[in-house]
Length: 227
Image (cartoon, rainbow, N blue to C red; front, side, top):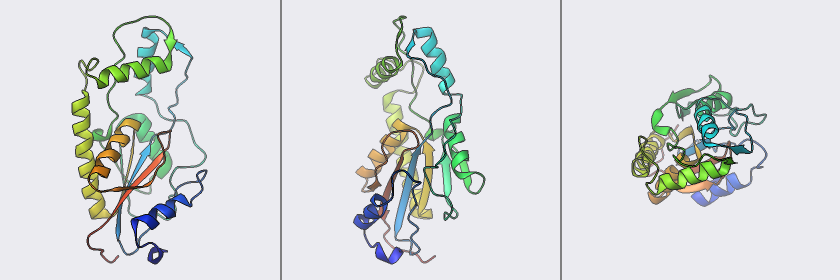
């Protein structure tokens, strides 16, 4: 199989031909010609939701969101049977750690690291009427993004600097180990992907932003090494 994939374009075809309803089979390049970074979003949090929240209830919900694991899933996002010696980094937030454990079990070296946590969020400090969950989360995030809701938490500039540094770190890890995986969060993964693409990496699999979404970035290494 490896001899049939000489280019990034063909690597994209390899991933596009896989069934979206099944686990993603990571391309195993015996000739070590590609470095790959696999960004996985955590599963759906094990948390009951209601349609409407007042401010007190949405603050409670937001705190619980950062403390719970995830709901079980029948099909894992990554096929793990043929993976060997892959480093798996994961955010220290419980929903990411639990997702990593469900996907990879104890077969792989799993490394918790707070640098891969989600962008921090603070519920808007005004309004106390019942509003939809989406209103609270979206408005809180938008105001945070424009600098109006970041008191006592990481601001948008700091978050971007963190994910830019994470992209550089993962690029070095992938060049060294050829394949590296990260189980993290939606905004975090989106910005890491953005900075990797700015640095010449290619998005060879677009898995979206949904729970358990898998996005894969790759680059050709300057000099392939024999396994």
